[in-house]
Amino acid sequence: MKIAIVVPMAEEAEFYRHYFSSEKKEMFGSTEFEHFSVQGNDLYLGLTGIGKVQAAMNLSSLLACEKIDLVILTGSAGSLQKDIHRKDLVLPNAFAYHDAHNTSAGNYVEGQIPQEPARFLLDSPEREDFKHYLERKGVAYKEGLVVTGDSFISSQAQKAAILKNFPDALAVEMEGAAFAQVAYHFGTPLIALRAISDNGDENADNDFVAFVKEVGAKAAELIVDYLKENKL
Image (cartoon, rainbow, N blue to C red; front, top):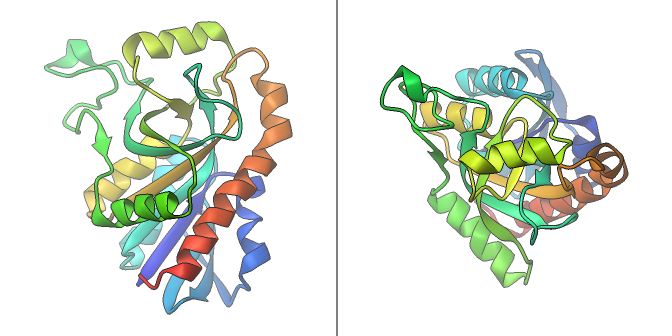
């Protein structure tokens, strides 16, 4: 099985290298993907860059060249709900764009790109298997909608604007919906695991710097353990 792990930031990618030894490196798009063998699976680790365009461009470049069976997205996110705190894990079951406002362009809802699904659902058997893995391990997580946009959210006003349109959104980040849109069009299952690094408010800058490495390590440890434990 060919599995791609995509992460936006170097701070989030470095932890995987603690567990695996790279066999070779190859460029897809503007991203260098490192190649590993784990439990009989071919694993591609790519640092895709920050934001929707970087995410979509580099994952598309990989999927157009390699028959990838599963994409795993890890990294950090900002909390949008009072009961979701720093270091919590979020297992998205859907992504939407919080900065897509196209309701006047036709029969569309907030977060929907014209002629695309309103939300990109993550409901594959592979994701369900990973969910059962977390439950077997006793790992606490929150499950629900995560929203994506090209801005780092760092004020209560920004959070309030997002929650007005997406009151059920658990967290906000900058790549997930783009990854999900690409995976949807390629027909490739996507598993996403985001760890909360900040509260998306005026302290987000300080919180993010302090916690992104810690939560990145937490997410990476779970993904690595899952891959080593399961021959997919």
